[in-house]
Amino acid sequence: MPKRSAVDAQVTQLSLFEIPSLPQPAPKLASPEDLSPDSTLDTARWWYKLQLESAGHPPNTVAAYTNDLAVLHAQVGTKPLRAITERDINAFLESAKRKSTRKRRLTSAREFFSYVIGTKKILTTDPTQAFYPERINLKTPVPLFEAERTKLLDAAKEDGPRSFLLVYLLLELGFNRTELLNVRRQHIDLTDPDAPVVYISYDDPRWRHKERRLLADSRLTEAYNRLEPIGDEERLFPVLPQSINASLHRLVRLAGLQRVITPQTLRDTFGVEQARQGKSEEELLAVLGLASDPRNLDSVRRYVKLAQPPSEVIRENS
Image (cartoon, rainbow, N blue to C red; front, side):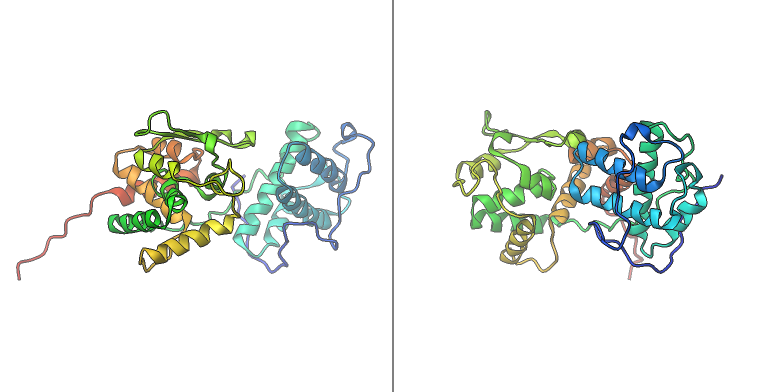
């Protein structure tokens, strides 16, 4: 059967949390072992929600998945699981106006049917199989020029060691914002002050593939040794996520740079610089802590392309 993508249609979008007007999961069986092909989506959804929670998924992820399934439940009603068809899934996706919502709905439905087919083994056919996620185009990276990098690092150094470390970890080691917020003192090995090693670790086992060890230089050691503890003494940046963006915005102004620069801008700059130094696509994925999937490969291929030397333009003699 050919792959199909959903089509736009008007609808009210879902929030990430339970909506009182939508059907809510309700237990109707004594045990999840009693689930069968004749169970309704409403019943299976309740047990699926418990499974997500017990697996340690964040509350917003659980809410997003179960809210999406609530929309599908409102559409199919009391139809048993075995009777949910590709037509039902197509209508479920078509009722979303935004491409990002359709993509999330397909993920929610696909993960649910993976649960009832792979984990519970009560179905053998996946009605979501004929659909593919619509491509959401990546934003083109706009990395910093060398002069801009120097100005930003100089302004951060003048502002203080914590500001310097914020810019350094993003720009020179390719941290993302979450990793920056999670870095702790025990993650920095200063055994060799000229070549310190920074560990990026994740408490959630689902993200262990992102863990890596990065070699820094003496600039990190110098700034780290000048740090004065604040708040949570273990975390280098005991602040809220939005505070990282605000701090960076302030440093950009201090550096006199007239452009929008975000933590992702610095990470993109790092990626391009690593590509310029000769790292392959797979090496870029590894140093950035990215899984080898089509979207991430697209990202690092853009870095490789931007790292190429400029093409010579031949001009006629005037």
